[in-house]
Image (cartoon, rainbow, N blue to C red; front, top):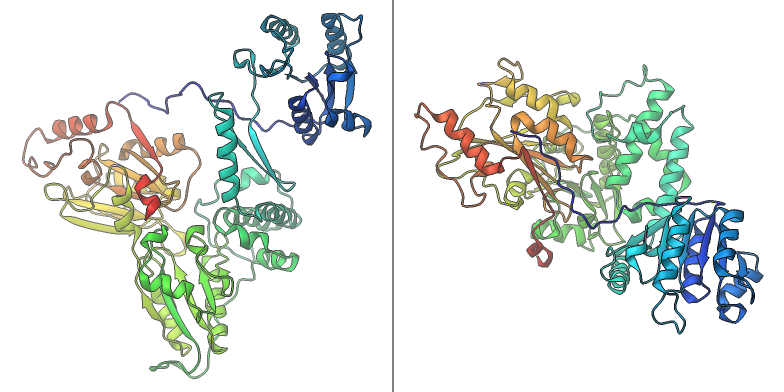
Length: 577
C-alpha cells in the first residue's frame, strides 16, 4: 500500500503566537480600529508607531491619551506632505516588523482606496514586512484573531479565516464562558513547579524530556538515581499533572503543596495492629468505585451518588480519571489524586492507601475512585486485601470498562463480538508487573483482542504479536495485515480513533503525533466489520485456499487504498447524554 498522511485542506491560517518585543509595529490610520491594533501590539511588548494620514483632527481619543502617556508614538501627515514620501521615510527610519492598515474600513467617510492600499502592499513587499489591511482580505499576509486574555499567562484566540469576523467574536465569547476562571493561576503554579523541579538538577531541555510523558519508565531506584535523573523524572511528572489534574486543583496549589508534590517520598504501607478483621469497621467506610471510561453519562447511578453525596468526606482518585468526572465532586469533599510519578506506581499506591486508612481511622467516608472498572487492571485486589487487613473491608462498586465501551464508541462502532466475525474476546494489558512489557495471547481468527494502556507500548506489542517466535506471546503469530484500531480518550469530546493494520501501526502512531492518553488497542477482524456496508463474512471462508488473497482485498476495501485513517471526536449525539 502507498504511504498516506493527513491531506491538507486549504483555507486555514498558520496560527502563530508572535511576540515582537521592542520591535516596531506600524499602524496606519487613527480611528478606533487603529487604537485596538495598537493596544494588541503594546500587550505583545512591541514599540508602536501610529501614522495618521488624515491629520490631527482624525486621531481618536484613545490614541491621543496613549501618546500622551508615552505608550506609543504618533506621526501626523503634514498639510504639504506627500503621503507616499512620508511613508517611505517612516519605513526607512523605523524598519517596522508588522504593518496594519486601518483606514480602509468601508464605514469611514474618506476610506483609503484599494489602489492606495495596493501601493502600501508593494512598499511592504520590498523588505518583506507582513501586512494586514482592514476589509481587504486579498491584500492581507496575516489576520487578527478574536482574542481573550485571561490574566497574564493564558490567551485564547479564534479565527474564522476571514469568513465571519463577527461570528468569530461570538464563538470566542462562548469559549471564554467555558474557560475555568482560575486557568491563569493554574498556569502560574505549573510554571513554579517547573522552576522547583529544575532546581533539583540540570535539565538541558525540559520540554524535550517531558514530550513523551506516558512512555514506559523503569521502577525508580532511589539509591542509584542521580540528581539529573530525579529532575527529568519530576519534569515528566509535572507534564502528567498538567495533563490529568483538574485545573481548579492546579490553581489551588500552595508553595508547600508544590514541594510535597515533587518530594516523591517513596512511602511504604504502614502496618495496622490487630490482624485481619472479618466484620464491618467500627469507624469509617470506603467504597472502591469505577468511574467508567470518562463520559459522565457512563457513570453508574451508585458511583454518581457516592461522588456527590453530602455524607462523602474524601475522594482518592487515580490520575487518569478525567476532569468531566472530577468536576462533579462538590467543594466540601476533599480530593486527593494519586502521585504516580513515572516509575513510582508502587510507592504512590502505598501512599494512597496510607491516606485512605488515616481517613478511615478518623471515621470518614471515603471513595476510592478508579478509571473504568476497579477490578479490570485496576489493582483492586491489592487494595481490598490491604484495607481488609486494616479493618476496613471496602464496598466494590463496578464501573463500565473501556474494554467494552471504547470500541462501541468508535466511529464506525467496533463490536468486540459479532456473529460471523468474532465469537470470543481477550482483554489484556500493555503494562506488565513492575512496568515491564506484558504478555499477549496468540492469534485466533475468531477472537478480538483488546489491550488496555497500550498507546505508549505499541512497539513492544507489535513485536510480540508479529514475531514468528516470541516468549511474550502464548500462541500463533498475528498476520501483518490484521485490522487494528487505536482508541484514545474514549467517550470524551477529544476522542480519537486511528484505524490501520498491525504492520503499519507503529508508523501510523508516529504520523499521528502527540498521544492522548489513556489509549487502548483493538486487534482483530471486528475492527472493520461495521464499516461502510459492513462485512460479517470473515469466518465464512476459513477453509478457502485463497483466504490470504480474500483478506488482503477485504482490508484494501476497508482502508480505501490508504494505510491508515483517523476519526476525531465523539458522536455529537453524546452531548445531550
